[in-house]
Length: 348
Ligand code: GDP
Image (cartoon, rainbow, N blue to C red):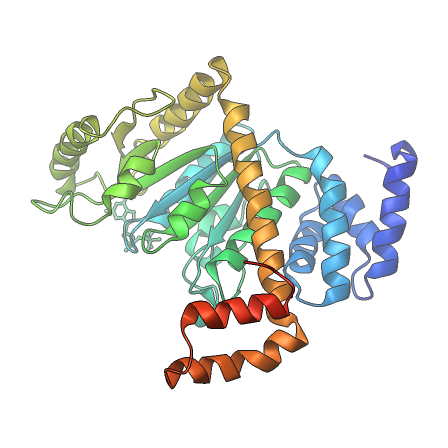
C-alpha cells in the first residue's frame, strides 16, 4: 500500500506511533512492512519485543495498524522432541512452500531461549537452504523469562508477518513442557513430528500432545529406517483411533517423511490443505480462530493485571514481608494473598 491510499485514521495512527518511538521510525516500519520488506519486518518484531515503555506503546499502535492487513495466512504449528528432525524438515518443507509460489515465515517458541540465547529453535544456521530463500523469513524465538511472555511476542510476530504478506507461518516449538499448548492456541494446524523406534513408540511424547495434533509425521523414513517408520505409522494410526472423537470430526492422519530425501514433504502439505478445506467447508476455520482470539484477549487481560499488580509500590513493599511471614508460619498463603489484593484494591 502506498502513502496516498492511506486513510486519514491510518495516517493519524502513524503520527501517533512516530511520536511515541524515539529509536524506531515506526511510520517507515509500517510502510516497509506493508510492502513486504523483511528488514522493516525484522525491525518491527524487534520493536514489539522491546521492554521500553515508549517502544511498547509504539509497538502496540503498530500492531493495531497491522491487524487489518492480516488473517489471510495459514498458521502451522510444528513440534517434536529435540533431534526428531524439526529444523531439517522445516528447511525442506519451507523450501517446498516457496517452490509452489508462496511466501513462508518461520517463527519459534522456545521458553529456554534466555539460557540458550535463541539457538535451539528458529535458528537460521539450522535451515541452510531456507535462509537463502528470498521468499522465506526466519526469526528465532524471542527471549523472555516466561513462556507467557514468549508466546505473546510470537503471536505479535505472526500478525506482523501476515501484514508483510507471508502466506504460510510456521511456528516451531520443542516437544517438551507447555510450549506446545501455546503454539496450538495460535495456529490453524498443529503438526507433530515423531521418531520411529522399536517398542517405544508411545512413550516419547505425552498423550495430551498426540490428542492435540491435527497431523503426525514420522521423520527420517529413509535407508534402514524406512521399514521402522512405516511400522510406526501403522502403530500411531491405530493409537490415534483409540482417542475420543474430536469436536471437528477430523481424523488425524499419519504420514512418513524423509527431509533428507525429500519424500513425504508434499504429502505433509496436502494433509494441511485437506484440513483447511475440511474446516472451511464446515465453517469451523474462522470459529477456531475467533476462539483463539478470545483466549488471546483473556491472556492479555491476565498478563496486564498481573504486571500492574506486581508493579504497585505498596504491593512491592509488602510482598517480602508477607513471604517472610509465611516462612515463619505467622500467616497463611490465603491471608497473605487477601491482604496484598486488598492493598491493590482488588477484592477477592
Ligand atoms: P531438531 O532438533 O528436531 O531440529 O532435529 P534436526 O533437524 O537438527 O535433526 C537431528 C538429526 O537428525 C540431525 O543429525 C539430522 O541430520 C538428522 N535428520 C534430520 N532429518 C533427517 C532425515 O530425514 N533423514 C535422516 N536420515 N536423518 C535426518
